[in-house]
Image (cartoon, rainbow, N blue to C red; front, side, top):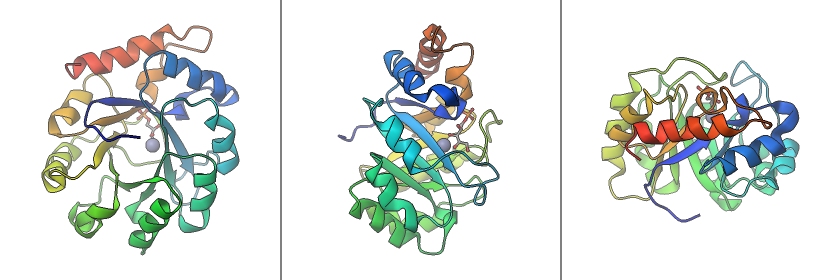
Length: 227
Ligand code: DX5
Ligand code: ZN
């Protein structure tokens, strides 16, 4: 994975057909996805459950782009090696998931993954000051994590703008997760984001038998951002 700030669309398979992840991933990649976003939920850190390392390992062989794993779990540390072995390229943990996020980020890089740090909508950016040299990606949640299809929280635009200033020239991606549509995407790109996660807005209207809408949806988001 080389670093650049070009716009990347990362469809979240939370909105895909759970019985058909392999084909869904091939379909969205063929339709122009840059990364594949994989949401891991534990029913404890967030009020929803998805899947763990075995599912990530099983879908890994269908991903030709970047496997972007978003851990909405607490604790994180006991599972880092398992997700790294499952093939995560980017492994993102939440700042709010425990008291030792510095150690968690060290362990993620130590396991050979790019380290991501996710911030809930209610979390400020002061706490990232001493973590900036340990992260490859900061994920700003624009919904409260747990479910797809929620409404975009506009207060996060200013947060992204201030985070972008703080990051300066450091090679750190700013990823936005939640409520991304052709209407909200350009607000975040203007504020400084380069990775846009989109679940419902990418998968709506299509299926593995009719994947054309996935491509139309991805292109609509890109076009809205002037790409
Ligand atoms: C929410 C997940 C998101 C979710 C986004 O907790 O982290 O990745 O899939 O879904 P949309 O794009 O529908 O808001
Ligand atoms: Zn996510």
